[in-house]
Image 1 (tube, chains in turn blue, cyan):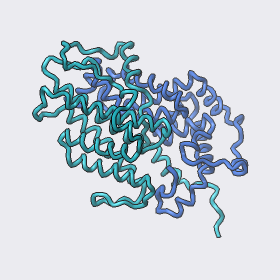
Image 2 (image 1 turned 135 degrees about the vertical axis):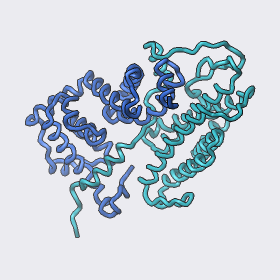
Image 3 (image 1 turned 90 degrees about the vertical axis):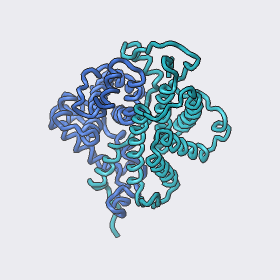
Image 4 (image 1 turned 180 degrees about the vertical axis):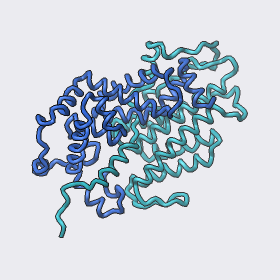
Length: 194
Length: 225
């Protein structure tokens, strides 16, 4: 049995040191996922607590087929989306996605005229509609497929793709002022703000 | 003269997304609160054991107020230097001198980078972009935490039996480091550099707790940590 398996086994048995070690090693990544999806630090703090309880509750079902972090990541996403549904945020997302025609038109000119810019992708994502934001984060950042997103959010794959397209287009406009740094650089993020 | 672009290129957006994917944050919860919930859920069991003088109660969370020189100085230069020293010293204690020095270099790099240097020469390896440096720092940080945890769990060197005070003193120092980092992060929660220091201190503290547990006399256990 490897050291990691031993730690997991001890955690399943309720050993505080083992539980704490798993939390310490993985919280920076798992909590980052929660924070991204929630978009609000106070809400994320509450959800993160729920997420970790759920992870430890589900620990006996962890078979070691994948990295613990990968396994925990899935639970974190599911639990966070559930929590967001509870606060009726996802309800709006699902409505937006299903009723695509009812959504407010994405007007690039209007964005430009209003002078909307974002200093970072984190800020820019917060300016997306809830539907586009969730789909973008799940697909482009968390690595979910459109089929998985559709299943997770109860929408169609077409709706998911449509929201992703809108999200990326809006992000590119919101972050347009960073383009100069990219073209002047060597193809890296040189010159972009942190 | 070309007009300013109204859209960020796709590849540039992809680069930003890649960076976002690897972003880490300081834990959003405190172990004290989480462990309480886990106990209520029956997922965490207290270890039974005889109590001895060595079984001082060790708080799992940092002391609310720092003490000694750290609080007295309140200067970031001191804090950063102390954090770097902590990381180096922590790994030396775990018999990982080479890696500790490497991480120390990374932290010095991060400090220099935050001052706006474009290219920094550290240990024979030049960095030409902040993104590369951050990626290396993150990797080193993660590796350090794993290595420290492993060494603490499987250390076969002669134990310092009868001298748990060594680790107790280190714990007190680490608590001050953590408290200083947490205090700083209240003002700048997204600051990657400050988050790195907090994580380093937290990882070193965890390793020290395990070393302390190993140094206690047979039959003695820590009541809580």
